[in-house]
Image (cartoon, rainbow, N blue to C red; front, top):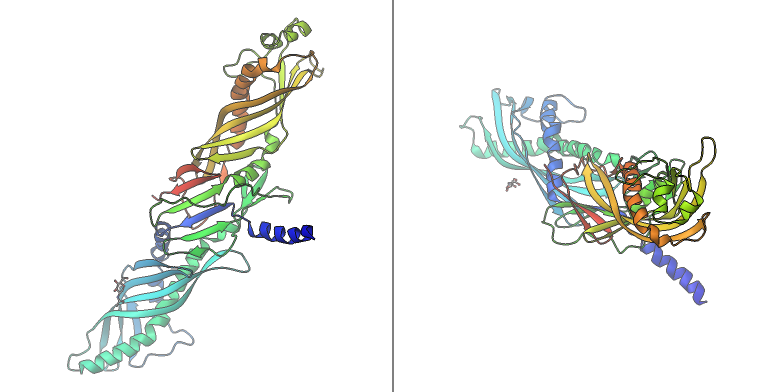
Length: 453
Ligand SMILES: *[C@@H]1O[C@H](CO)[C@@H](O)[C@H](O)[C@H]1NC(C)=O
């Protein structure tokens, strides 16, 4: 009975405990950069150009014919977060409307106005992508000047302008807001593209839920999908604590947090590449890789091989490599075997001397280059060494600690760094440039404090 209860409850608990593998906090700094979309896309100018054209469904304006819009001022855009909704957008601009007035003369109206709308942030059902939708677009007239003859009653002019402009402007300008959003929404679209992790698989930053808007930022939670080429997905471990951006970052700033679990899953794609056979005689600063060198540590080798033979080393990773992160330090854990062979004449298989079970750590240094997270490693510590098999009889493997430590640093670390060289993709969102980010290691995660240029 209790068992059943636990099954039900524990199921619920694990269901509720799904943590994001990565999260992105978008502050006003990024959004202000995005809103330059308005300038880039020259939306208002295009709208103005459209204004003169006859469009189906557009009511003619009583009193003005041959209407045209010109001299659209560069819009000033102000954005504000609306908690739980999205972004309030105010576009302040000015323009000149020309036409023939009902009095027959050329008419010019210079208007300064604000276009306001709430851009609600949603998650599109079909694509799972975030989208902004504008709601409640309004045009607020800040000032109106005209060349209409002053002998007309000002009251009448004002009434005419007010009703005319209120009729015509929203239809003319609100589509501009929508058009800008189309442009902005397109900058989320790449999120759905799987991005390569070396040649061994892909990662896709899938949205976990609708992004949440607070008074100071938008938070986007991802549950990244790490995928092998032939379809098999790698699950992210959920052994860390909840992923949270630590406090203390400036209001309006933006951060990306990547969990150790995500990086571990991506490294799983590369696991096979960490298995290597090394048979070079000279490696870095190491003494010559021969049985003679080895005999300096374990005399049993000299007995078995009085004449020096070149060494061949095989490293096999037996468990998934694991990334851990603590404040200021990140390690990559390897468990596996290191087997040394004595080479024989050509055509003959090398003979195994011994096999050691090993566990060692590499320290990871992170950087970002061309929007990819780069890792380079150096040996941190050889944690354990135990003898598995041996063809040269029993020996004390502890005597090999220095030899193996140097070997890992000089021979194996470069291999690992070579495998990691391709880097790891970062979420392609709103054309964010991650290259200037400041990196900090926190508990179970890597934090990228985004700096914009
Ligand atoms: C128009 O927008 C600007 C900038 O947001 C604001 O300062 C001003 O008060 C607005 N004017 C009106 C009439 O709403």
